Image 1 (cartoon, rainbow, N blue to C red):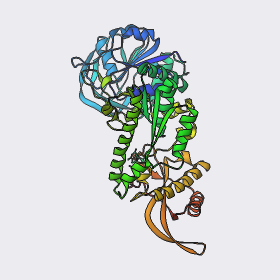
Image 2 (image 1 turned 135 degrees about the horizontal axis):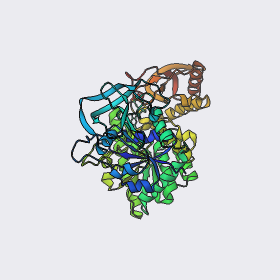
Image 3 (image 1 turned 120 degrees about the horizontal axis):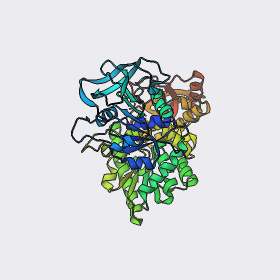
Image 4 (image 1 turned 90 degrees about the vertical axis):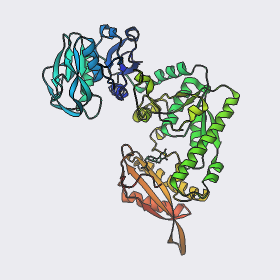
Length: 516
Ligand code: XMP
């Protein structure tokens, strides 16, 4: 376990977690502390350096969040970013004033003097700003080493005391060479070694979960997707049989999906897994429904009822206090400062909307500091198979939005087989990781065909494969013709119910990824 910790003090910026993530990317351990943590705690934790994050407040405002002044007497390097540099300015004897105009967006950073923070980097750089105040007069001992058009003091330092300040955001991708600046802070100034690995996070997370949960019982809705699977594996490692996972089979899953989850979690991870076969209920409620939004509403509503009932059964047997969710950092919608305590006000996005409140359960969200790629790395570190960790996204309403129009058991059956052929072939040919999402769609249209000597009149299968980085925009994947020919021929020959296959060549926008 790495002993070198960089403390990130949280003043409420959305970027605090991004800073922590960048430090992990540099393979250094970082820990986020509430802004008011006392310096003695940091000393006891043996931190190698302190970063004061950005934040939405103004240091000139009464009651704005401040760190313990003794942080500056710890003898370790301190880096202030945005609000953090203004705090340094104000608390160390300089002066902070409002900027003539709020600096928001790109600026050009020009280097004025040599600095360890900028070592090995050549200016000018395009950097990303978001601030309304600036350090008008530097504290004694400080000097400016770089400036932008609007800010004379864009990078400042007191090299003797190892205090550094950056007015812009080096942690965001829009700031050129931002990572190199952070690397200089970590490796040249704090003298850290890049020895942190995701396996180390497992130990930290397990300790945190045990501390939070104590002897209580935890319930987790397992969907088989990456986030809930990783959360389940992690919590199981931390509290074992104090965790119960509930998997709802809504009848809208892909071929073999339920069995795969059972094998993995019950078999291999020895999780107390309750599988609820609710397919009958879901399909009954969906009978005759063709409108996509109505399908989604029915499925969401039904899920809550089924999950609720299962939790009630588990509760009857003992005390349950926590509902675990695989919320990731990007799911956390906003961070608004109230009463000067920004850390306490971050809101969560809940996959199963409103559940914890209704059930009077406390939330356990062990992945809330992580980004998707980190969750995948964590999944691998926990021993989940790559196939599970690198799965494509699958929508909550499942195949209901891939059987266009009315949903029947027969249609789902036909679609499952075709989808399985498409996905197996993608895996076999090595194309699976190259696309963002791929799936088959059942079209409620019949077309004429001929098979052997017989005329057929069957449904149409659409294949969809897209490339994307965030699902907001997507392009159709240019899959090789030979590959498509093989998949099409297998589907038509092996799946009774389809006699025609189409490949969707629409991008998003104007189309969407799903058909419904
Ligand atoms: P669209 O079709 O809007 O999809 O381009 C964007 C991404 O979201 C997924 N998706 C959903 N996920 N519930 C979900 O959990 C839904 O109702 C839903 N609809 C779309 C889709 O698979 C793609 O990854």
